[in-house]
Image 1 (cartoon, helix red, strand yellow):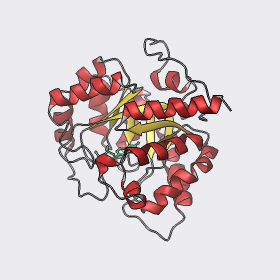
Image 2 (spheres, rainbow, N blue to C red):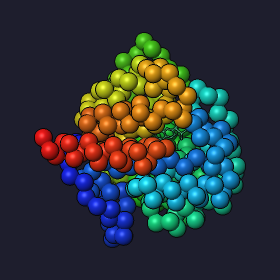
Image 3 (cartoon, rainbow, N blue to C red):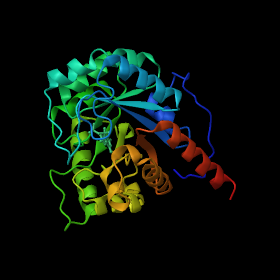
Length: 286
Ligand code: HH2
């Protein structure tokens, strides 16, 4: 994926192909809009906790050009003291929002590390599973993904950052383990997306490295997703609170696409779509 590829129009009406494969076939970066139904997410915690506010935000993200809605009901923020919630609580938060969000028509990914939550979301119509522990936390999750033949996003993670390690080697070794779990469970390779997990188990410097050296991960031969939106590494370069990190997020995402990302996960869909379109247009004008 390069910025120079032409932008094709939205193809959302085409229901014949499987949603992720169809989107990846468009030949432009795919934008995933973040919908956090949580009281404590690091950048928008509480804003969309009420179901009507969550649905309004889902509609806004789609209107702004999100190709996929990434819906999560548990904050995963590694350094902000997010509270772990039970599967029952996650499902309770999702229940009033997920069916209506899915009915809006864009493919929905479920951001969860729990097999039972994924099972519930898929039953309601979620099209993709997004696991911030890359199938390594809840071993049942791989079987749920395989049984329903849905795509899965395998994200790199660590319990704690270690500034002494080669982060790219660690990411590659983690992906190799996750892919082995996926293969053993029977997940088809064409249903796998890899994500270096910006801000997860990494120092801010290692997050910068993961974007700068993203192209090395192309050796897995799988689509790459990057989610740099509003993350802490931006603050380390240019100190501002999370809701003022749009410029840094866009810079990171444009460079991620330049370095091989096929998908971008963002809270700020309109500005990101505009930036990607302009960058692609400039690429085409070379
Ligand atoms: N980042 C977050 C959550 N889920 N999933 C993938 N695949 N990649 C990411 O980079 C990623 C993710 C953290 O962002 P956010 O959802 O806004 O925060 P929180 O986890 O606190 O709800």
